[in-house]
Image 1 (cartoon, rainbow, N blue to C red):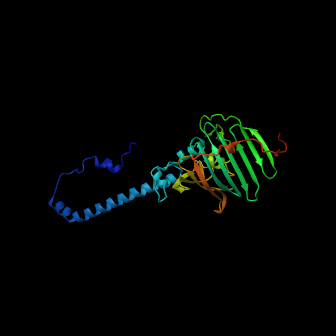
Image 2 (tube, one colour):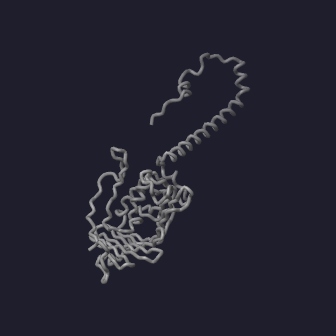
Image 3 (tube, helix red, strand yellow):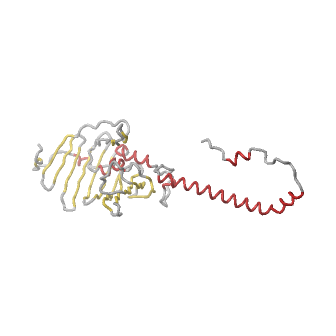
Length: 303
C-alpha cells in the first residue's frame, strides 16, 4: 500500500539552512541547550511510540465494532492458545457443510425439555437413527435408511413413513442478496435425513450468525471447540427469542457442541448441550431399519 508523505517529511527534503553562518553566539547557545534538546528528543520519541500504539489499538477496536474479521490472534481469549484456530468464515463453511466432514457420528444432547440420542452415517451409505425423549416420558423415534424415513410415536403406537427425495447438489453461494435486497439462505438437503440435524448439520445456526466473531477456543468433550459470539441476523428476527448467542462448534467438522441464547435481560431463553459425542468410531447400522414394528398403526391421515 502506497502511503502519502506528511508535511514534515516534505519539509525535510529541502535545504535545512538558508544561511551558512556559525557565530560564537550560536555555538554558545547550542552548547547550553544540548542537554535540554536531547531530553526533549527522548520525550518526543516516547510520545511518538505511545501515539502509534494508541492508533493501532484504535484500529483494532474500530474493526471489531464494524465486524471486520481480524487475524485469529485478536479473537483468541482462551488461555489455551492454539495457532490453528480457524477464522469465522472457515467455521461457518464447515457448519454449512458438516455432513462432508465425517463418516459417522453418534452421541446425545439436551435441548429445552428434550433428551436426544442419535447415530448418523453420511457418505455413500447414508442413514440415521434419532430418539427424542420428552421430560414427560413421551418418546419419538425418527429413522432413515437413506431412502425411506420412518417416524414412530411411542405414546400412540402410530407411525408415519415417507420417501426421502434424492438430494440434489447445491451450486453457488449459500447466502446472498437478490435484486430486491432480500437475503436468501440456500439449505442443503441431508441424505441421511437426520432429525438430530441441530447438532450434526447446523446450517441454520450458520445462517443465523452471519455477523459472528470468534472469541476463543477450548476443549469440550475431548474435542477442540471454537467459541463464537454474535447477534442473530436481522433477517431472522425470531431466533428462539434470543438477541445474543454464544456457540461452541467442533473446530474440525463444524458440528454443534453447545449453544446459549440470551435475551435483552441476559436471561437464557435457548440452550443446547451435547453430553456425549463419538466421531468416526463406528455405529450400529441395524438401527437404520425402516420396517414398521408389528402392531403399530399409521398416523391419522397417512397410509
